[in-house]
Amino acid sequence: MAYSNDARKFYQDELNGIKEAGVFKEERYIQSPQAADISVEYPEGAPTKEVINMCSNNYLGLSSHPEVIKASHEGLDSRGFGMSSVRFICGTQDIHRSLEEKLTKFLETEDTILFASCMDANAGVFEAIFDDRDVLIADRLVHASIVDGMRLCKALNESFKHLNMDHLEKKLQTYQDARFRCIVTDGVFSMDGDTAKLDEMVALAEKYDAMVFVDDSHSTGFLGKHGKGTHELKGVLGKIDIITTTLGKALGGASGGCVSGRKELVEMCRQRARPYLFSNAMPPVVVAASNKVMDIIMSTTERRDKLENNTKFWRKGLTEAGFDLREGDTPIVPIMLYNAKLSQDMSRDLYDEGIYAIGFFFPVVAKGQARIRTQISAAHDIEHLEKALAAFTKVGRKYDILGKGKNEIIEMYGL
Ligand SMILES: *Cc1c(COP(=O)(O)O)cnc(C)c1O
Image (tube, rainbow, N blue to C red; front, side, top):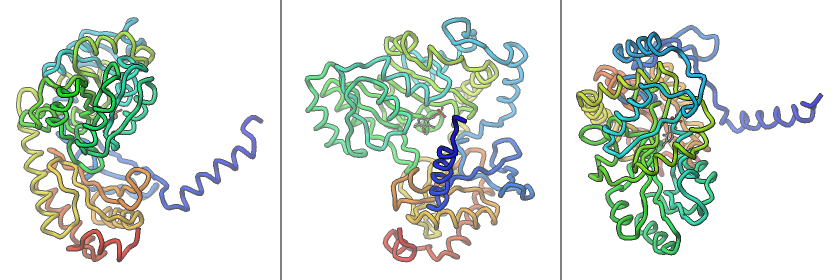
């Protein structure tokens, strides 16, 4: 037997260790479409319960939008279920190319290439463009998929302190002899909801002859006046050389990702990016629905406007109730609790009150930085948010954390 008893015991012990540390992740079974109101079976075997979802990436409420569902049915009927091919063999339909063109127009870039996910886009893009003559200088809190993509590339992997432009400038000075330099960042950082200083980064890139790479997965579709993303919010449209983003969050939330930017760099990905060359094309039903999503967000800003208003209402309400929030102006609103167990206990009590909000702790966030990360959606109506506020306030009062800051909460609950 190749899977020996020793091997089995080793993994059982590992898993028990995770459980004993109180950081074992359980999944809750949703029995309805993704929406503001969802039916959930939790714990396993319990009767289904209706709860308000406060933690999805369904920022624009398009995941179950009737027009998007209709477009996916039409895509299924007209283009079939699967491609059974990678793009360059026989996996490219007209609708794949039109989705790429719509993304290019929306993001105001030169060209776009689709991937099966943004994880794949990030895994492929660096290796396709850079080699051992180059230096990648990344914010220290970039998404795990960027870290992995950089590792797969032979360029020197460097970093700068989170959002620290002085530190970035020093690193750019250090590597003036490299062939190419590339500044690498998330547009919006998913755990804190803070934004990259793209305007300052572009200025530094011009001064020190560097490219700029932004992963805008948590902002494409809603940040900036027309929802184009962090580059619109910071006034640097057309100045970002490489944007990666996902179709798996605001843009319908099914799956898919892309690299969008300078046309030569996009073409290099089509020729060389391994996840593009060696993994299946996006399914027609997802592509057809995503085309509809692009039509919707390019024809009106109604949904991103509603999201912005909802976010203001939510932040104001939580602040007035006395919660300790991470500052920011994105729909990611983290309620800081610092202690991992407290984040789990509060999440469970919120569920009893009809609110679905997950607690995050190490290793998803740094040790001693546990929190409940709430995410606002255009699918929420003010009534949802009012109900959620009442529940959060009730639970916050139970744990006596309202009006308390970091030090007081840590004093009460430890780290
Ligand atoms: C969610 C996310 C990804 C992964 O996107 P998928 O399309 O789900 O693979 C990549 N980067 C960032 C910054 C993300 O937030």
